[in-house]
Image 1: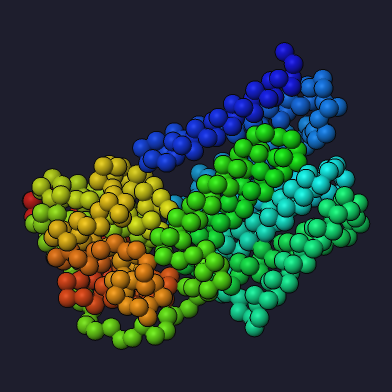
Image 2: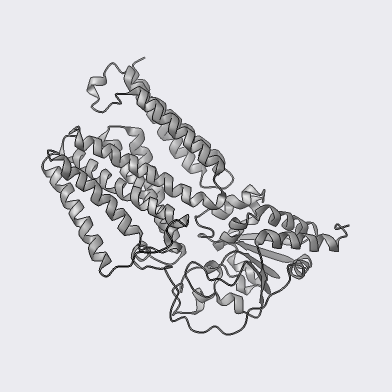
Length: 473
């Protein structure tokens, strides 16, 4: 059989698996199998690339791998590193890993563009334009994603503040685009130093664009760079005449764009506001003094109150992931269910550090999908709940988003936990959320604080309920 026909068929199969896998990822029930399906699509696409060497019509294809040994070595290193890092990464560090992988994808697209431009392999205005755009977007995604990773991982703990920073960034971007336009105008016939300057400026812009953004917005930035990477890969797929790259890039780009818009909407902010407002970089001003006082309660007393409740709704947040308390939480939930208590989980779209973070965490502990609800599906039920339990969440349950027009988070959709008859907030201390805003919920008459590490608190709650049933003997 003609190798060209096998290659084209393989790319068609890979594209189908990518799209079908993404479709299955839309539901928690089928998400795991969707990832496996998309993974097999990537295996097919990678293997198809090695078949180019068997193509008798290779001369008709302008862009072919020329060193199978180096490609195989690179593939082995990539597989080994991905397997090792994937097995050892903590759930709390998953957003950092996503940022790194986004960056690597953008870097790969930029490297392809660099080879095309330096080797004068791309001809025609359309091909050159897409190569330049792919190089620009991929470079920005690479350096920006690395900064996002460093901020989330605590390796960079400051934001960049300079007078006229946006003007500086605008000048860098304008100069980079001007060089790119010149390269297209000259049909790629430019000196190597100018091409190198183009990529250096693009990398610098990625750093300068990301450094001013506060930690609260890093998940949105990561999602945006994910879209950038997909776009860059799609452009370079056209340059290489590779259908699999084009389709995969378009799928990733569109999915990343939709996710970015979804996250921005969940915070009632525009993407422009996320990128240029410096939100979450410091304390919030002008929010006014909060009336009331914080009240603390013992974990055991809170657990006994929940044991005799009719309905309990749990709102998990990033603190649950940090404490790795999901397994003990579900053990406690099962004790409540055995006692006849109706228990549900309420998930805010930006709970944790990435959309779906809490869903994955709860699924890891074996929590059934049918008691996990998205915000819009459960928000009206809080007023019927005897108890609402907040574990490690902050801004996503702050009533100031509904009532305080001077608050930076005003207008942000929140979980209506304050409408429950009694609220327990499990928290390690009295710290503020990513936004730097004091949480009005903590001062409400119907709210009590349970201070401590979430896992230790859950152990204490389990022991308290078991002691009531005589299970502690």
